[in-house]
Length: 241
Image (cartoon, rainbow, N blue to C red; front, top):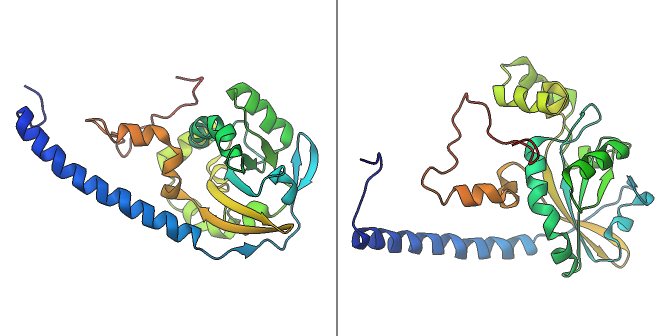
């Protein structure tokens, strides 16, 4: 006998219809939140940041590549890393194929990290991604929006018991826990209007779940994510499974 509750088709359909009504409520609420995001005020980016790219040193405005909108995924790949974060790599597997579709809607999508450009490009080639990747290692770009942690911010965390998953991810990236958690994943959005760059949106943590397509799919299976505390995390780079 299966471990889970079993019902007739009619009983299942009745419960599925009830669940569908709940799902539609979430969908409509999501539409409302999207409208609220778009109504957020813009903040002018007054600091002059520079980025190292394959086309040379570029300003934030130049990263738009002639488009009016810019989406940046802040990929965890710090100066001491030997390889990109596994979770960020899984996210980029989802992001990269969307680059041309977003470009068709006047939006540039790219990655930014603090590691040297040559290391970023080598990893990008290994992963086979068609997405631009710039280094912000010589600037406070990530720090200013909370995607780089200071030693003072990390002190309470590092003085406590380091979660095994952090040690696992740090080792997989070729660094130690401090080097690993100094970087913070995130997504930031920008608008270029009359030659002025404005920041329009920022998110991190579970706000990034829409970029993790595998979780959306697993959430619709019987076993779900099946991630248990204390067990090694199941994620790997796509060339390591």
